Amino acid sequence: LPSATLDAQTYEMTNWGSGVERGIMMATDPTTTMADLGKTLEMPANNLGFATNVITISRYDASGNLITDAPITFNIIVDVASTGLLVYRYPDASSTGILLTSEGGSVTDCDPVGRCYTVTSPFTSSFVGFNVTSSPSPSSSPSPNPSTSA
Image (cartoon, rainbow, N blue to C red; front, side, top):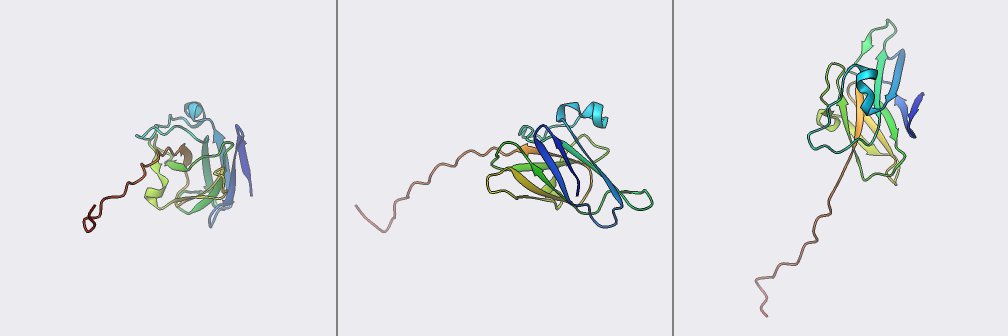
């Protein structure tokens, strides 16, 4: 199956979905989407920062009809280890992303050091991975037990 590489990031198609006769994958820099896709993609409200380039996937059946609502699976391989990846899907007619997991998609690690993620989406569109930033939670301190006395 095909792959696309841009800026030391690779996108590997693992399952085009049923009924697909041909497909197109395009990787583009998130800062050039107006020129490449005809729209500027909005950052999520939590402004996590881009972790990946934009991967746009188009699929067609044997008659040349665009397939948009059949599951698709691909890998995102990044050049720098990450603590996680939030993937947003940008529908073809929208500049606003939708958190992939909120519409039934999934993102799972395919590499124990955080450089590869398997993405499954119920729809075809453009996809962008954003950094997951997590702050360490404070360690819990033991609470006094009311049944013991000093």
